Image (cartoon, rainbow, N blue to C red; front, side, top):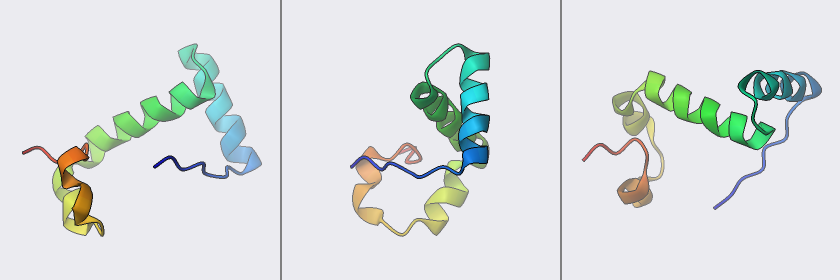
Length: 64
């Protein structure tokens, strides 16, 4: 399921500048940021607070 978030003007400008710095499109920059943040926050915290246990088998945070 794809989700298209609405960004504020400030957030859009920030994302655009990050994309320029990375030399990639904004969509790719957003994916890079999500992957990077996912690694920083950690599986344990995310899994503990997850409200949808039906998709664990495809979840990035599932380390099993």
